[in-house]
Amino acid sequence: MKRVFVLVCVLFMMANTVYASEITWESAPGHHDQSVLLGPEIQSSKDIVQRNGKGEYLSSGMLEILNQSNGSIYICVDTFAHVNVDRIRHTVFLDQWDDRKQDWVQVDYWEFERTKEEEGGELSMMTDTITIKNVATNRYYRARGLHMVEIGDEIEGCATETHGVLITKD
Image (cartoon, rainbow, N blue to C red; front, side, top):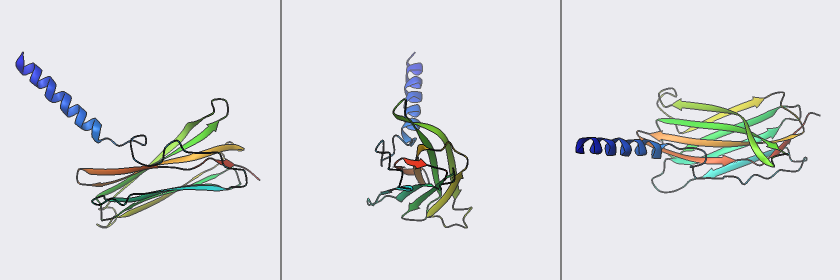
């Protein structure tokens, strides 16, 4: 009976360790739930989170959303490290404003990843762009980003969030 108890305790501790090391958009430091709906004359929104703490690998995360005025959305996501890292990952979430709920609703997401091996041994920044065509127009959209860098077993992350931009088709 004592062995079973010890085994259960060890398994519980291992499960908690794995869970605690997982970084999500909600748990990453940065900007959360600060989006406002911008006026129709404003075509883009950008968010930057800089992390300059001693010993940190992640330098900054940047995210921009742009109304292309043709029923399309352009998004650019950047993740920067202070040093050469093993892997950079970022995820972009696209949210649409729901007038009835008076809240944001996630409509899509994209994941990107590169390793230093794929980049010839040097990896300290990563940029990706997305163009989403034929979206519902005269609606507000925002982007959220999760930026992560990895060295060995160490993972650091931050969260970005743009303001809501009205997507139009002129």
